[in-house]
Amino acid sequence: MTPQTRPYVLSIAGFDPSAGAGILADIKTFEANGVYGFGVVSALTWQNDREFDKVEWISADRIISQVEVLLRRFKVRYVKIGLIENLDTLTLVLDFLHSNLIDPVIIFDPILKASAGFNFNTSEPGKYLELMNRFFCITPNIPEADFLLGPDDLEFKLEALSETVNIYLKGGHGESNTSTDFLYTSDHTYAFSNDRLINGAKHGSGCVLSAALTAFLALGKDLPDAAEMANSYTYKFLASSDNLLGHHQIVSQ
Image 1 (cartoon, rainbow, N blue to C red):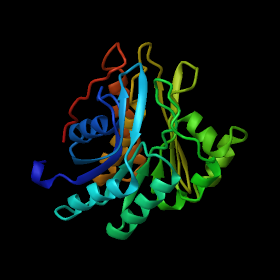
Image 2: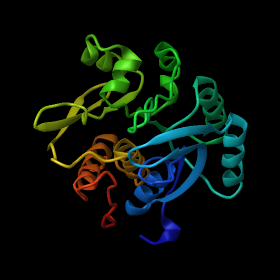
Image 3: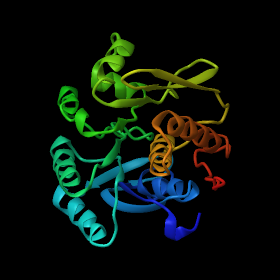
């Protein structure tokens, strides 16, 4: 696949100077998986792989302005949204995307807490549910799903929500020897299991999974195949080093 024929994919995410998470991780994932990634910054962060000092948010109008200049030149359909300040900002960005993209496919990674421990979100979880029909897929981990839906009867609630939006539940926060991710769709639930790695914790692994899923969808894979491929790519990323910063490997096209 030549660069000229690569699908264009947009990430709207925070800037992490360590490049383990956020927009730099997304762009590296896009490149490794054969799509051309555009990046729009939604937040500036002061962090490394272990420490988080502060965040400076980018307003909705400045996020939209960054997207607008790209759309003057390029047709974009596939969008991943990561760290974003609040529901108001997210709503305005979604309004713009749905008004200016043809049949957009939007993947939302509802980041509530940095891996270094900083809490980003203070919004009421129920308000997020009002936006679910505007996404193609959301990619929460277990704590994020608990926040959005409440921890009681979580599986039942996920199956009910999958009537509105596809859900890729990242299972890395479990404690068993096996880590299992689940994909909930309106008509089926899929499971993707891997042996838990001794040194598998990686800064930004959730960003990588969501970006890989977006990339494979842009390459024309259906959702179950894209989810399985994203799971496989992320597992290789988790196994790529013994420290918190993983390495990306180019996938054969």
